[in-house]
Length: 337
Image (tube, rainbow, N blue to C red):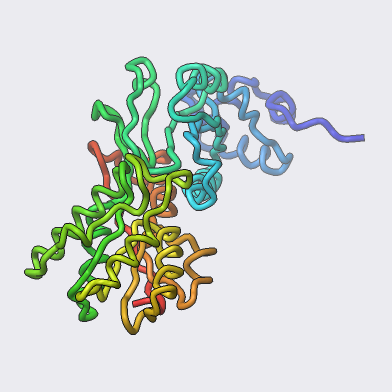
């Protein structure tokens, strides 16, 4: 038979004092007592194996040791779930539990928040599967304390986002430092990440006095938005670039999936990586980057860092950022450059 948990009343009866006094000693409230009494109560509680009732404590305080997470498509992207994993690990180490509610493209956000509120979370955080601008109703914005991998278009909610522009700058600088001068770029159309990374590429080239050719900055897919369903332009673009009198000696790819297509297309036109052309990309999807031949140099998305940083903010170990906090990528150098 399972023994019942030790209660405050059990401790009080053992010491011959009131339950109120025991509660005051164990819950650090303002009830007056001597330090000797307080220590005696705590020592006996430890000896008896007393475990505080977190639900009851939360009910009294109006909050529970819970943080709500609105996951906008996050659980559908294997590499983006690293945000959740790191966030959850850090909060668990601080005695907090993450309750995840999955939403899609901001739909049903208010309903999901109301459902989370019934659990009395200490905070509610919003996380997205990719870097995007989110337009939330005012009533919802008041409930969210932090946004991850996305930002509030109204500028009211502190947000942690990847530093896309600087990642593009670093990728181009890395190729330039390696002696590549004729650098082309296969962009991700219609995405914030794509436009910011391309801007960083342009800045690095300009600072080095190198020309950005318009016909060497091309979209990876046809249409207004990069997606797996959009028709790829990679094969045709590579064939055009490498049939001309002057070809690129370095290519920046919008992400690792684009790079995989570039590898195949370059082999079709008889070019060797990195001897003829160096390749660098973004994301560090390890199942792709490590298994390509040669393994792909890429800028790793800072999903782990965003998750850990968010955990530090929620637990009070780091200050809340003002507006947007841009988290840097990490260069993972392999054999394609």
